[in-house]
Length: 143
Image (cartoon, rainbow, N blue to C red; front, side, top):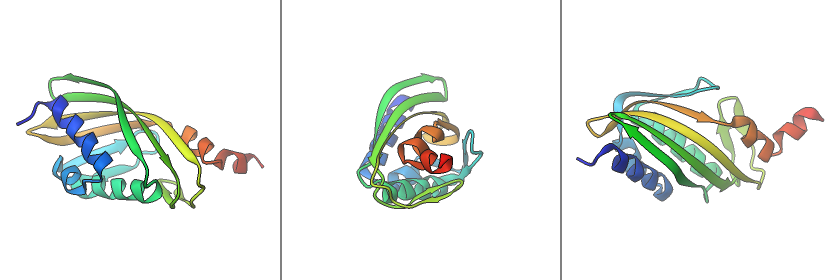
């Protein structure tokens, strides 16, 4: 079994390669990932796969770059940058954003508890305000 840092690097490679089977295989059946801020919860392999597919349907050119990865025991903290062009509908916790054709760059941080080669639980922190601003949504809200 790979160490936890290698496991997370492989997971990000799977995301970038659209390898949905590997994404699903990295998550424990009873895993919950909470998006802090929105409170949205992703449950098990299906939740992770649904998120990945929705994101790449909205941003087919999307890619993630690992900026920093730190591990202590079963806890992995990963800071990363996501980039893509929103050419499809983006499904967010607050609703669906029609394609804008705009580029998005977001910095995020995830914390995973990994045991036996699977994510047991996770928390995701991302700046949804920056995403909305880059998509031109905050201008519409002001006007």
